[in-house]
Length: 234
Image (cartoon, rainbow, N blue to C red):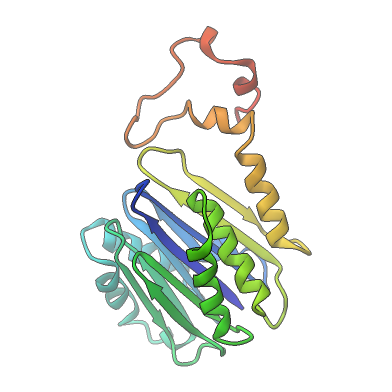
Protein backbone atom coordinates (compact mmCIF):
# COMPACT_ATOMS: atom_id res chain seq x y z
CA UNK A 1 0.00 0.00 0.00
CA UNK A 2 0.77 3.59 -0.39
CA UNK A 3 -1.69 6.03 1.14
CA UNK A 4 -1.18 9.74 0.60
CA UNK A 5 -3.06 12.92 1.40
CA UNK A 6 -2.51 16.46 0.09
CA UNK A 7 -4.35 19.37 1.71
CA UNK A 8 -4.57 23.16 1.59
CA UNK A 9 -5.31 25.19 4.72
CA UNK A 10 -6.93 28.46 3.59
CA UNK A 11 -6.78 29.97 7.10
CA UNK A 12 -2.99 29.88 7.19
CA UNK A 13 -2.22 29.71 3.46
CA UNK A 14 -0.15 26.55 3.99
CA UNK A 15 -0.01 23.35 1.98
CA UNK A 16 0.76 19.91 3.35
CA UNK A 17 1.12 16.30 2.38
CA UNK A 18 1.63 13.03 4.21
CA UNK A 19 2.21 9.49 3.04
CA UNK A 20 2.87 5.99 4.37
CA UNK A 21 3.71 2.70 2.69
CA UNK A 22 4.75 -0.89 3.28
CA UNK A 23 8.02 -0.30 1.44
CA UNK A 24 11.04 1.94 2.05
CA UNK A 25 11.53 5.70 1.63
CA UNK A 26 7.98 6.85 0.93
CA UNK A 27 8.93 10.51 1.36
CA UNK A 28 11.62 10.40 -1.30
CA UNK A 29 9.45 8.49 -3.74
CA UNK A 30 6.05 10.10 -3.27
CA UNK A 31 5.95 13.62 -1.85
CA UNK A 32 7.21 16.75 -3.59
CA UNK A 33 6.32 20.42 -3.42
CA UNK A 34 7.10 24.00 -2.54
CA UNK A 35 5.23 27.20 -1.74
CA UNK A 36 5.54 28.52 -5.31
CA UNK A 37 4.27 25.43 -7.13
CA UNK A 38 2.00 23.34 -4.91
CA UNK A 39 2.30 19.69 -3.96
CA UNK A 40 2.38 16.33 -5.71
CA UNK A 41 2.13 12.69 -4.66
CA UNK A 42 3.39 10.19 -7.23
CA UNK A 43 3.00 6.53 -6.31
CA UNK A 44 2.00 3.11 -7.62
CA UNK A 45 3.47 -0.21 -8.72
CA UNK A 46 6.07 1.62 -10.81
CA UNK A 47 5.95 5.17 -9.41
CA UNK A 48 7.34 7.96 -11.55
CA UNK A 49 9.40 10.59 -9.75
CA UNK A 50 9.38 12.34 -13.15
CA UNK A 51 5.61 12.76 -12.83
CA UNK A 52 5.99 14.36 -9.42
CA UNK A 53 8.44 16.97 -10.67
CA UNK A 54 6.67 17.58 -13.96
CA UNK A 55 3.28 18.31 -12.44
CA UNK A 56 4.86 20.86 -10.10
CA UNK A 57 6.49 22.58 -13.06
CA UNK A 58 3.18 22.80 -14.91
CA UNK A 59 1.40 24.25 -11.86
CA UNK A 60 4.19 26.77 -11.26
CA UNK A 61 3.67 27.86 -14.86
CA UNK A 62 0.00 28.58 -14.17
CA UNK A 63 -1.78 25.31 -14.94
CA UNK A 64 -4.41 24.07 -12.54
CA UNK A 65 -3.79 20.80 -10.72
CA UNK A 66 -6.32 18.96 -12.87
CA UNK A 67 -4.82 20.37 -16.09
CA UNK A 68 -1.31 19.49 -14.97
CA UNK A 69 -2.24 15.90 -14.11
CA UNK A 70 -3.86 15.35 -17.51
CA UNK A 71 -0.85 16.84 -19.31
CA UNK A 72 1.71 14.78 -17.39
CA UNK A 73 -0.07 11.42 -17.37
CA UNK A 74 -1.51 11.45 -20.89
CA UNK A 75 1.59 10.61 -22.99
CA UNK A 76 3.03 7.98 -20.59
CA UNK A 77 2.63 4.45 -22.01
CA UNK A 78 3.25 3.03 -18.52
CA UNK A 79 0.64 5.18 -16.80
CA UNK A 80 -1.71 2.29 -15.99
CA UNK A 81 0.77 1.17 -13.29
CA UNK A 82 0.97 4.57 -11.61
CA UNK A 83 -0.98 7.07 -9.50
CA UNK A 84 -0.61 10.83 -9.31
CA UNK A 85 -2.24 13.46 -7.10
CA UNK A 86 -1.68 17.20 -7.25
CA UNK A 87 -2.64 20.29 -5.25
CA UNK A 88 -2.18 23.70 -6.86
CA UNK A 89 -1.59 27.12 -5.33
CA UNK A 90 -5.31 27.91 -5.31
CA UNK A 91 -6.23 24.72 -3.47
CA UNK A 92 -7.35 23.04 -6.70
CA UNK A 93 -6.85 19.29 -6.96
CA UNK A 94 -6.21 16.69 -9.64
CA UNK A 95 -5.64 12.94 -9.55
CA UNK A 96 -5.10 9.90 -11.75
CA UNK A 97 -5.17 6.18 -10.92
CA UNK A 98 -3.98 3.73 -13.56
CA UNK A 99 -6.16 0.74 -14.39
CA UNK A 100 -3.38 -1.71 -13.46
CA UNK A 101 -2.92 -0.30 -9.95
CA UNK A 102 -2.98 -3.02 -7.29
CA UNK A 103 -6.41 -2.97 -5.59
CA UNK A 104 -7.86 -1.55 -3.62
CA UNK A 105 -6.73 1.53 -5.51
CA UNK A 106 -8.61 4.79 -5.92
CA UNK A 107 -8.87 8.40 -4.72
CA UNK A 108 -11.17 10.57 -2.63
CA UNK A 109 -11.54 14.34 -2.83
CA UNK A 110 -13.01 17.21 -0.88
CA UNK A 111 -12.49 20.97 -1.08
CA UNK A 112 -8.72 21.49 -1.05
CA UNK A 113 -8.01 17.83 -0.20
CA UNK A 114 -7.10 14.74 -2.21
CA UNK A 115 -6.46 11.26 -0.80
CA UNK A 116 -5.07 8.47 -2.97
CA UNK A 117 -4.00 4.91 -2.32
CA UNK A 118 -3.16 1.54 -3.78
CA UNK A 119 -2.66 -1.96 -2.35
CA UNK A 120 -5.09 -1.02 0.41
CA UNK A 121 -6.98 -3.53 2.51
CA UNK A 122 -10.15 -1.92 1.16
CA UNK A 123 -11.41 1.39 -0.18
CA UNK A 124 -12.62 2.13 3.34
CA UNK A 125 -9.01 3.07 4.09
CA UNK A 126 -9.33 6.05 1.72
CA UNK A 127 -12.48 7.26 3.42
CA UNK A 128 -10.94 6.78 6.86
CA UNK A 129 -7.93 8.85 5.84
CA UNK A 130 -10.17 11.66 4.60
CA UNK A 131 -12.41 11.61 7.66
CA UNK A 132 -9.42 11.40 9.97
CA UNK A 133 -8.14 14.64 8.50
CA UNK A 134 -11.52 16.40 8.57
CA UNK A 135 -12.22 15.39 12.17
CA UNK A 136 -8.83 16.47 13.49
CA UNK A 137 -8.01 19.85 14.96
CA UNK A 138 -4.83 21.84 15.40
CA UNK A 139 -2.08 22.75 12.93
CA UNK A 140 -2.18 21.36 9.40
CA UNK A 141 0.70 18.98 10.10
CA UNK A 142 -1.09 17.43 13.06
CA UNK A 143 -4.26 16.92 11.02
CA UNK A 144 -2.25 15.16 8.33
CA UNK A 145 -0.68 12.86 10.91
CA UNK A 146 -4.16 12.09 12.23
CA UNK A 147 -5.23 11.17 8.69
CA UNK A 148 -2.43 8.60 8.40
CA UNK A 149 -3.31 7.17 11.80
CA UNK A 150 -6.95 6.80 10.78
CA UNK A 151 -5.99 5.05 7.55
CA UNK A 152 -3.84 2.58 9.47
CA UNK A 153 -6.62 1.84 11.95
CA UNK A 154 -8.96 1.13 9.02
CA UNK A 155 -6.68 -1.63 7.78
CA UNK A 156 -4.02 0.24 5.84
CA UNK A 157 -1.50 -1.82 3.93
CA UNK A 158 -1.89 -5.56 3.54
CA UNK A 159 1.90 -5.70 4.13
CA UNK A 160 1.94 -3.42 7.16
CA UNK A 161 3.85 -0.13 7.17
CA UNK A 162 7.59 0.46 6.82
CA UNK A 163 7.98 4.20 6.09
CA UNK A 164 6.10 7.48 6.48
CA UNK A 165 6.63 11.13 5.61
CA UNK A 166 5.25 14.63 6.16
CA UNK A 167 5.78 17.76 4.05
CA UNK A 168 4.37 21.23 4.84
CA UNK A 169 5.17 24.44 2.96
CA UNK A 170 4.00 28.04 3.01
CA UNK A 171 5.23 31.44 1.96
CA UNK A 172 5.63 32.66 5.52
CA UNK A 173 7.29 29.64 7.08
CA UNK A 174 10.33 27.44 6.78
CA UNK A 175 9.52 24.17 4.99
CA UNK A 176 8.85 21.18 7.21
CA UNK A 177 10.02 17.97 5.55
CA UNK A 178 10.15 14.93 7.81
CA UNK A 179 10.86 11.37 6.70
CA UNK A 180 10.98 7.99 8.37
CA UNK A 181 12.59 5.86 5.68
CA UNK A 182 12.31 2.57 7.60
CA UNK A 183 10.92 1.66 11.02
CA UNK A 184 8.90 -1.08 12.67
CA UNK A 185 6.32 1.57 13.66
CA UNK A 186 6.83 4.43 11.18
CA UNK A 187 3.75 6.42 12.15
CA UNK A 188 4.84 6.54 15.78
CA UNK A 189 8.36 7.47 14.70
CA UNK A 190 7.06 10.22 12.42
CA UNK A 191 4.94 11.73 15.16
CA UNK A 192 7.89 11.64 17.57
CA UNK A 193 10.05 13.41 14.99
CA UNK A 194 7.32 15.99 14.39
CA UNK A 195 7.01 16.65 18.12
CA UNK A 196 10.78 17.20 18.32
CA UNK A 197 10.62 19.60 15.37
CA UNK A 198 8.09 21.72 17.26
CA UNK A 199 10.21 21.94 20.40
CA UNK A 200 13.24 24.04 21.27
CA UNK A 201 15.90 24.47 20.13
CA UNK A 202 14.84 23.55 16.59
CA UNK A 203 11.56 25.44 16.32
CA UNK A 204 13.15 28.68 17.56
CA UNK A 205 15.87 28.45 14.96
CA UNK A 206 13.34 27.96 12.12
CA UNK A 207 11.86 31.36 13.01
CA UNK A 208 15.16 33.04 12.16
CA UNK A 209 15.67 31.65 8.65
CA UNK A 210 14.50 33.23 5.35
CA UNK A 211 11.06 32.59 3.88
CA UNK A 212 9.46 33.60 0.60
CA UNK A 213 7.62 36.44 2.34
CA UNK A 214 10.75 37.49 4.26
CA UNK A 215 13.70 36.41 2.10
CA UNK A 216 16.32 38.38 4.06
CA UNK A 217 15.24 37.34 7.52
CA UNK A 218 18.11 36.86 9.97
CA UNK A 219 19.00 37.84 13.54
CA UNK A 220 19.86 41.52 13.94
CA UNK A 221 23.30 40.66 15.29
CA UNK A 222 25.29 37.77 16.66
CA UNK A 223 24.49 38.98 20.15
CA UNK A 224 20.78 38.57 19.41
CA UNK A 225 21.08 34.89 18.61
CA UNK A 226 20.04 32.91 21.70
CA UNK A 227 22.43 30.13 22.54
CA UNK A 228 19.62 27.64 22.26
CA UNK A 229 19.03 28.66 18.61
CA UNK A 230 22.73 28.64 17.81
CA UNK A 231 22.97 25.03 18.95
CA UNK A 232 20.20 24.08 16.52
CA UNK A 233 22.04 25.19 13.39
CA UNK A 234 22.66 22.31 10.93
